Structures are given as C-alpha cells and as structure tokens.
Image: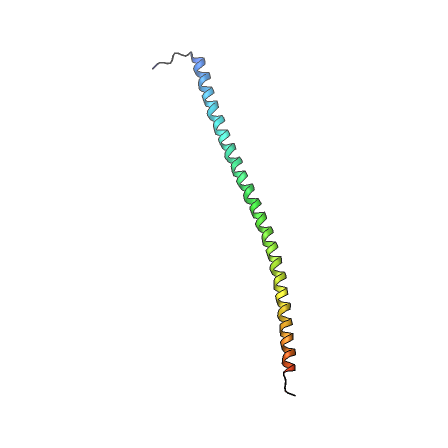
Length: 89
C-alpha cells in the first residue's frame, strides 16, 4: 500500500506519534512514581503509628509491672507479719 500523504506531512505525523509515545511513557513513569511515593507515605505513616503504639504499650507495661512488684512486696510483708503472729509463745 502506497501512502498518498506528502512527505512533509508523513514526517509530521510520525513526529506526532513519536511525541505521543514519549509523552505516554513520561506520564506512565510519573504516575508510577507518584503511586509508589503515595504507597511509601502510607507505609511511613503506619510505621510511625506502630512506633507510637509500641511506646504507649511499653509505658503501660512498665507501670503495670511496677504496680505488680509493689503488690508482691506488700503481700510478702503481710505474710511475714502473719507468720510472726502465728509463732508459739
């Protein structure tokens, strides 16, 4: 099949097609980069929340552990006082 377009028009048409392909590739890369950046931002936000939660639960654990130790000391103290009271005279 012979193209009936003048050579200058064929050149312009090929240039336009090549430009569109380059533009499509650029947009595709830009969108992929944007999507990856969005995904990265979401992951960073989740990691930040996870770290905050970890610190919060660690603080709660330390408070609970300290209360448990104090309660254990009080119980041992009470048991020793009871043991002293139960000694034969």
